[in-house]
Length: 222
Image (cartoon, rainbow, N blue to C red):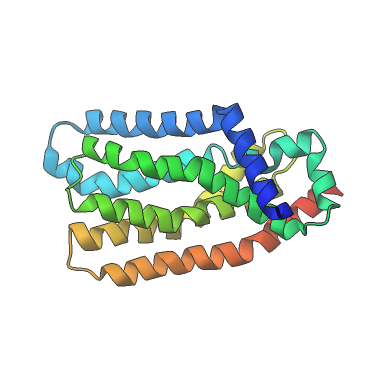
């Protein structure tokens, strides 16, 4: 088994074993969407109209809660320094860790999103586009988060600074994630155009951010 796959499996096992970050993200997602649906009231038309923005925006915030832990534990026990000197390039280490974060945190959030969509009276035709658009856009969330986690590595209040650094970078994902859903739910709009741009954002992010994240980790390890 290659070192890359081994590292991904290791991070997934540690993530599921600890469970705290995943539980916090899922709990935050459920609570915020539930409170908003109750607070807005019983007007089903309003709930349907705001559903894409609420589901996408809350998902990004929920995923953000755990991105600071991408490197944190390994940095605390010295494992990250060993990885940096190991046979696997640090860029691939960051890819493995971001991928593990996406699988362990973002995918569960995507899977629970349709259930929460029922709280917001999401139309039936919106469920498939909700899942597809989130699966296409959430990798960018984890990979951008890896950059922020690398930049704030070792800081006492790194989580707060990370939020300030990363949230503006999430805005394009949020915009085109919502527009992809609106193209189907509201119209008139071209689903393929918005979805293609969303996929392009993710592709560019996955290609470029490992280099930025690796450089940030190296700087903080020196």
